[in-house]
Length: 175
Image (cartoon, rainbow, N blue to C red; front, top):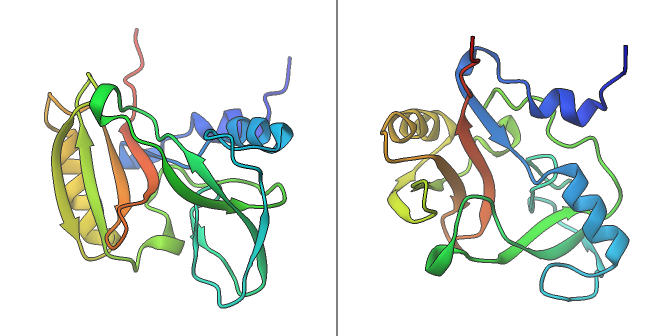
């Protein structure tokens, strides 16, 4: 029997929530770090979050004071054409474990007001709703993903509109 890497096991875990909360994939982060440049060709430069609070898209929590980070340009999944966008996101400068509970709303970001933006199968925006916390966001995410025209949602920061993470329905197992 072959062993699966932890990130493959975690990435496929959905649990009872019926939703999968997706951080930036660890494999993609390794590619960016190995290249030494982000998707826009910017050199990777380590920054220190002196006060803490920057949302880390690698593990879906806020940075602690003094943590070393990279600010990279990243294109979130599921968008295409005129709706495809690349924007700034913070990640750990060193490797981290990633987001290990993809079946639940990230507790480290649940206190933040967010915008939940829905996308259709063609990568176009189908809806956008401002929410005041993770509980409200989870309700809105479920409602949006129940629509047949919505294939995934992004959860984004309110003030700057930066991408935080994607959420998808749990794929149904075929018999």
